[in-house]
Image (cartoon, rainbow, N blue to C red; front, side, top):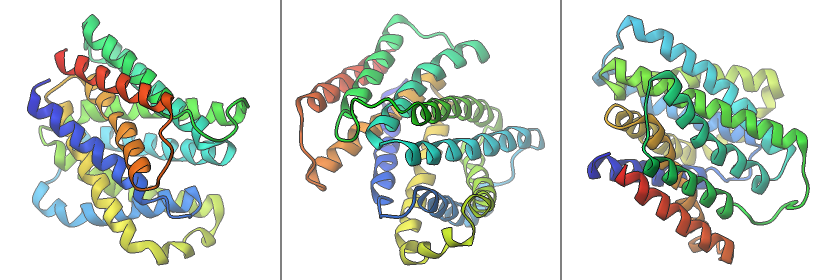
Length: 280
């Protein structure tokens, strides 16, 4: 992974953390997720005029990814409803890079060196340490953990599918824009079936913040897909988890959350992991 691509992925991770912090607005997880998805589609739609239309053979990859993302959002929402953020988030985000590296090796033949694998393992360990705060720390909620693991599987699945689709498209930005439009079309009907029309009413108060978050989401994942056309999918997917580090720094600086020793150790592990990934 070149320095330019590596720094671009880190910038995308920062934007990913930014829109995640931005949407902590007190709404129900389903309402929040739907709001951001609709906003992402609105941001992406006018840009399609400049991006073009994907090759017809790519629609199967886009449709598959949209379906996987629907399951991803459903699993994430149910996991947040069943368990604490401190229990769910590290499992969902921490387990995904290892799954993705394994899946990429099996499906597209990506072979990582010992340095690359070591970087991923250190980064995953750092994610878990950064997330050790608050909540039912000693409780093991099987339903919440089950949904979190399911979410990790969907993250792995859409990372590999989108990595392949972006590479075959030769136009990863167009691929990403059409993907966000597709997600914006399928998630609101799911939200309606899940919770009814009441899920949409609170969104009207936060539509400006939703548009900002949607723009950041489009930029973040668009850059990630572009990077996957130039670097191994597993390394890009793992580097995106630096968003956990950025999110923690924002939480400490802006939300005045405490800086525990475990978080310091987690931050150091993530930085060490990123350095090894850069050397891969």
